Amino acid sequence: MTDIIKLTAAEIAAKIASGELTAVEVTEAHLARIEAVDEKVHAFLHIDREGALAQARAVDEKRERGEKLGPLAGVPLALKDIFTTEGVPTTVGSKILEGWIPPYDATVTRKLKAADVVILGKTNMDEFAMGSSTENSAYGPTGNPWDLTKIPGGSGGGSSAALAAFEAPLAIGTDTGGSIRQPAAVTGTVGVKPTYGAVSRYGMVAFSSSLDQGGPCARTVLDAALLHEVIAGHDPLDSTSIDAPVPPVVEAARNGSVAGMRVGVVKQFRGEGYQVGVIQRFDESVALLKELGAEIVELDCPSFDLALSAYYLIAPSECSSNLARFDGLRYGLRTGDDGTHSAEEVTSLTREAGFGPEVKRRIMLGTYALSSGYYDAYYGSAQKVRTLITRDFEKAFEQVDVIVSPTTPTTAFAIGERADDPMAMYLADLCTIPTNLAGNAAMSLPCGLAPEDNLPVGLQIIAPAMQDDRLYKVGAAVEAAFVEKWGHPLLEEAPSL
Image (cartoon, rainbow, N blue to C red; front, side, top):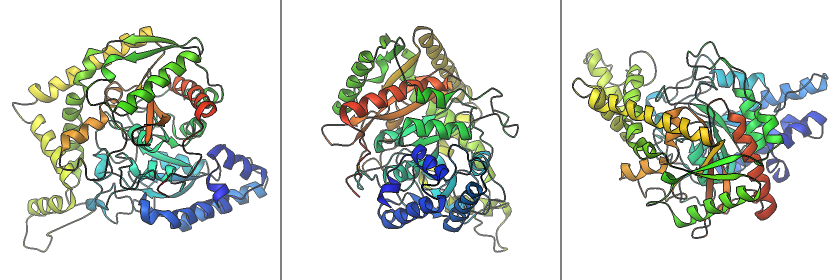
């Protein structure tokens, strides 16, 4: 089992295709690993053991019939519990959808099944993807496999923890303000936010519709590219889906190079609030890029300093609109429907019981920002800042091919450390939010451990919209150089396990 769970997704797929391993053997090994460690980690909310084994058997039968298998056929995956999955609970980490069984698959779920990827189950997350630590889940927090007393990032902490704990070689996350990249950074894994509209949002429970984006999570850049290729592409069911070919991400990951590339370093992505060890590892990464043949260009993007404030007006405003559908009348939790309460009272009681504190906080903030007399002052002004951020990126990409930064200002903090300080929690997304506001593509990959706490640090790479292949080209080159110099931090089991 240990040998199987330490393989990359690409290696697993090759061994299944050659007959060296069966998909059932691989699935059983990962299910056994989940059974052994997930009581401590709590990466999963639901394990679909029967469904996963049935998918694995179907892959083995295909191979026996001599049918051609896809690049990820038989590879297990952990799916964030924000994507509808027919016949499998989808809760979005909230009590308001506890026990809800969707009657249809999200487009991402459907594409995974069509590619013969084996879905092990649904992962824990901050309720409705609102959070940076997975502490806002109605079903309890997830631990970081590097140190179970630390957070695994959020909102997709379950997906990142499943990877770091070797419970799955692949995972799917969503990124509204950094919820793929920030968990990847603090768990020593790879996470990619594709260009907005590159991966369908159909069947992905909405938080902030103009920011939400699903994406791949893995332990290597190549594995992330292989998964990216499976889930991306135009979808007529999503009105924001981009009707354009998927960039050649797998080819880029197989041919990583930064020779001759111009790499930007933004001065706004460092300073007060950044951990010394994080900046140290980032500076080493920049030096490494220079060694590999990249030209380093200093950039000034002044509007980035306003990104956090703009985001926390735009995202709550959109969430207050999107979450209005959870009224206790159509599906999900219903409280107070005993014949003595009106429909309005039932809705109020249901939302009081079903939504957690962070969700309520953001709904109230968003409703206020959209209210009469305040719309222009708050939401309207935030959208103007968004335009300025987009223009700063456009100017930057006239000078450089990609931008790099720390993914997060700090390494993983202790569970409970920021629970009573929402503003401190929001600062975890300081480096990731500008990309969501502009709709660009971005990746986080490991760049070593911070010397003061021996916890993973992430390097963020940002590329222009629909140039996602640049992320993989640069990421693969950096990853190969890091492994050659210092080894991969996740080749050994995370210390807590």
